[in-house]
Image 1 (cartoon, rainbow, N blue to C red):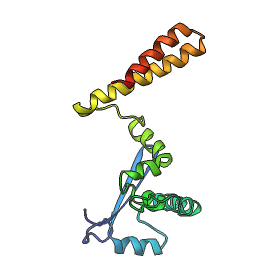
Image 2: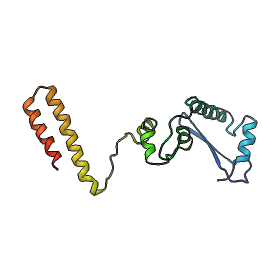
Image 3: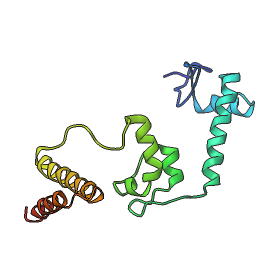
Image 4: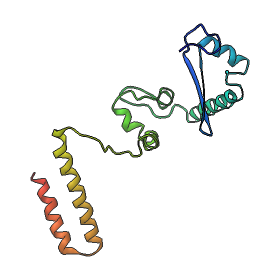
Length: 163
């Protein structure tokens, strides 16, 4: 992509704003971005001012939170995760779970996987799901004081221990 301002350098910065479903996008090289930024402009004119305000607000939020959590596996900080938008290792999913949950819900509609799974994992997952369902049914039976059903469910749950 070529810079929209100088038209001769490769654009390395993309400014994008969506207001009332209208997308405004500008591609700039580093030099044009820095010169426009010093002039108080980004190239999006009034739209750019709004975008800069949003970026500054986000920077303030990150600074207000301090360094936040840090992954013991790869050393990634919460601030770095927010800036990069990517995790560093598998441990990051546990460490940044509270930060990730609203993002996953927004992007995928859920925090649970509903797609395909490897066949060798399917049997184990089915057993875990069935066990969880039996445990929930047991709790409902106990709350309803249906002790005969609760005893049968308890026995089924015990059978899972021998599988």
